[in-house]
Image (cartoon, rainbow over all chains, first blue to last red; front, side, top):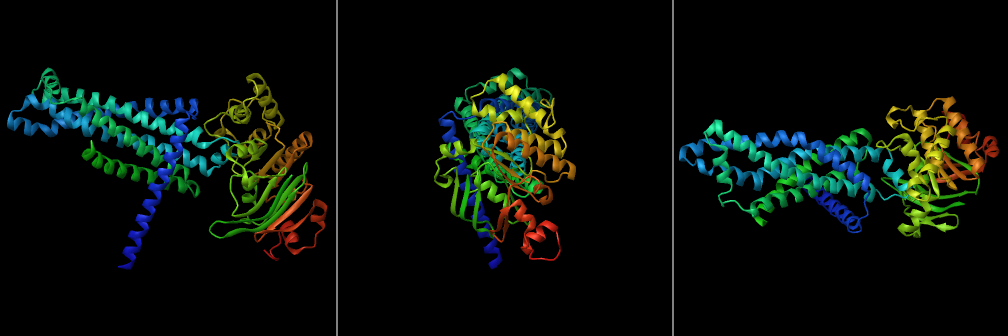
Length: 256
Length: 244
């Protein structure tokens, strides 16, 4: 029994330490962003690498997500004959929840994990120390551009995914329920959905991006133990980011 | 030039227990000791990459532990550093790696940077390697790029952490000779940590032996070769029997 309490205690102390470290890192990043002290070339490189190169995976995920929404809703829509509400239903779920959430999880797997692997490799091969030895602030040069890159990527990818998911849903409604895209569009713009629903999802995407960026940078920067350590850091990033996104999503769904 | 007084450091166990070290200006100083003795920690402390738990570290008469971030940046600009793992930036070409310290100084134009990069790469036997990437180089070539990067700013202090680790004896000797030549040309102060003691002693002026967290022997290279101290003899001869 005491072992159980010891394990639980260690887990909570470890979790508190990680959250605290991420908070300190957030403060250090913000202090650079306020002074606009970040490397422009690194920022552009990361925006391309994280954002532009994520477009194919976001495209596939979003299109099929829209289709899945219609497949799941089809029995209920058929039972109640609520074909006019298909656009509203798909739009409500996509814009407020599914779009930002699934995009974040996809980007986490691709960008967050890769970011940790890159930073972790740089740490264990002394490239971080080399930057510091050259009187270069690693936060300004490496971390702040990656933070902005991840948050911007997630925000813009969510907009892109929202649009594509709705297109996917609109065209899945025709063969599955016989709902014309025009009818779907009318349902979407009937007034039941507002700007607030769009902003709800976009605010979530920004906060998910902050969680992902902080976790991936923190675990990357604190990597120890050579190549196995990089593997452990990537694993920790994926787990903590996914868990963090769901916890934050739950809290934001109440708050917003 | 460099002075360490009663420097202590504990990680999971005490590593440095009161290191006193003096590296004279313009000399090539070799720091030797068994694996895990804390040699790399000493080097990183001088560059202020690792902070001691106690003691004083003075470089050119200035105590680095009391420096502000801005002063530390100035201190580091006066240092060229060769890392044990080379620490070449994966996301840059060889030319960009070597040019990087100069570009960050911001006082040198593009054409002069290109000239100096070409001169450095030629000097380390890698002329024309500017557009290649670190992943495509051998261990010895990476070391030489690291030396080119560490010496391009003509820094007055060069720190070398295992500059010949993992290299064959011929390449290892060439690396040491190269560092010695560079030091003679620039009159810089060089502190080298190396496990390749035979070859290290061919280029050093003075040697310090780090053991059990302290400097237990210090002398000229000749004094080191002639020393009858059991630990020094064991390190030099690689004997199984001895204090280690």
